[in-house]
Length: 416
Ligand code: HAM
Image (cartoon, rainbow, N blue to C red; front, side, top):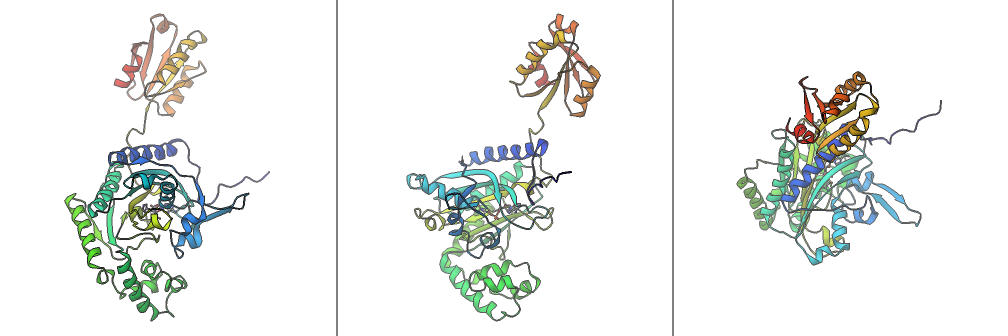
């Protein structure tokens, strides 16, 4: 027997109902984001490796270990996108959108790729629905974007299943003095730090606060806290973000250890977490990134956004409306009625009904199949029905049946 090629590790085939869930979720999210003024955007799955190297941070796990990189036949180094923010910023610069209109809002959905160790909720190909907003430097706008995230989770029926965690990463000046204090503090423990943290000590000591290593965590307990190094302006900005959230009645928990895994953030950082998914608890994450566009060679325009981990959300008991469409099975009793039935079935597909044509005349087999597939109605066309220009409509949930005129069939089905 020949061996079968395996599905790539940490990646999944999506089909049938599961794939429907992804599509429905994306549709719901786009609908809501539009109400907040977002337009849709789609960037290529491959980007020049520079887009990420220049923005996500040399010491971030994504750049250090997780990028899928390939060289194309022309010798260009391309990366499968590990996230959506830097590509959206690149697209805005390249299409001269940012210079024409500095204030725009965007929503996107699609697969992202990170070479991580796969486990529940952590995949090598995963899906994000993301939002990015540019050019509005008001702390209440940060609250507005977090509000959008909160609305999306509520639309998905996740009310009560998550907590909003909030922190500030301040402006560059505050970051530099905090960084200095951290280097001084952690340098005293060089022999006890994990190899990862030791490597980060001089490059990005903030990430040591985020370490999962037990000993690192113990050492970090007495490390300097950012709030003591925040500039007055940064502290005031953060106060106002919190005020905005309170005005909108959005509960949040301050978490000084929330530093985010990507380096482009400034000021507000936030994560929506859930206790229902084990180790991979973050279902939506984001923050402000005021320097990213400039770092990628564009104008000096600020941004803020977030991304939802779609695969994780779908592991939660979310409620996706309109998921089940009305499904009907159409069956004729003989070849004589089939033509009429066939046309009827195609017509029904023009209304919001899933219409399945049965191509055989074995009534009991067809009914069995319709039941098995969870259809709502069976439409049966025999010689007598055809003569009266009617069809027998069997309600498969209730077991009742009724003769219905062919002309009024679609309105009858949608009403019942
Ligand atoms: P991130 O925190 O790297 O941020 O990812 C956002 C979300 O994507 C995570 O909270 C998680 O739900 C999901 N996610 C990340 N990695 C995986 C994985 N390997 N498997 C399954 N789900 C995963 C960003 O990507 C930023 N671009 C978010 C952002 C947008 N910030 C500003 N604008």
